[in-house]
Image (tube, rainbow, N blue to C red; front, side):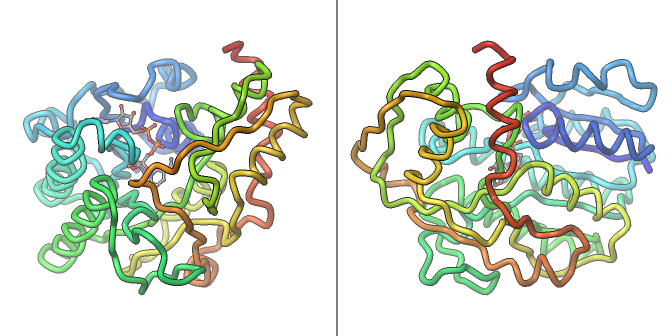
Length: 306
Ligand SMILES: NC(=O)c1ccc[n+]([C@@H]2O[C@H](COP(=O)([O-])OP(=O)(O)OC[C@H]3O[C@@H](n4cnc5c(N)ncnc54)[C@H](O)[C@@H]3O)[C@@H](O)[C@H]2O)c1
């Protein structure tokens, strides 16, 4: 199948692209390198079934340049974090809302069969109960979460009006090699330099899931019948930031200390996914140990020599 991965130069996207090529698909990546990195795609660049289209999802014209014959879209391009949406509200809105609308419109205009949307646990906002199932109200408390809710709504509209097979996945906190600027890579790099690890607030409970599981699940969607409901993609297990920091210090043999700083108000404090729907619908296994990629990631960060 010919597959378009928007945001394919990013953290999750680049792992997905590598895997789709290994599965024998033809893959086109559309990315504007806002946060993605060329080196993430270094292993694919010369693959005969790989094509990179530098383009911006905020502009429909850029979609129109894409080749014909695309059968499936993984829509991952986004301003992909909470603090980024605080710093630049306009970019977040235009990329995450207008850009998602453009991607859906492109799917309709070109007769694309299936569309996977990377939504977020931030759609829920602060949890009213734990674990959070998919029927929990969508009370996003920041602009990033709000933009994901808008994207989901447009996915529903395109499903209903145009029969697009849309899969909406509400990802928990995904981690793994090539991620940066998020808590796990920040903690690991500080630990490797024996610098103090800063915890904002200290009450956070986070559901981590490795990028390996997320990619496995994404690939399953190439052949899975359409699923009309959103699905939580998490481990179903909560990890506090103290537990995370201690695991990283232990695993890396670091002498770093921890400091607790004031909480950042826009951040959701507690989230643990209810993973029943994930486990019921898909063959991909919900991971037993949410931090199983930690050791590999520490090695990756050590070798990248930052
Ligand atoms: N990593 C997580 O924990 C997590 C959790 C929930 C949801 N998600 C969602 O999953 C998707 C992938 O996340 P990620 O962690 O790989 O993020 P990422 O930032 O590494 O990847 C996003 C990619 O989108 C590209 N991009 C940004 N603006 C663009 C634009 N206007 N036009 C074209 N490309 C653009 C970036 O350059 C980047 O390569 C995102 O939609 C994100 O919101 C991620």
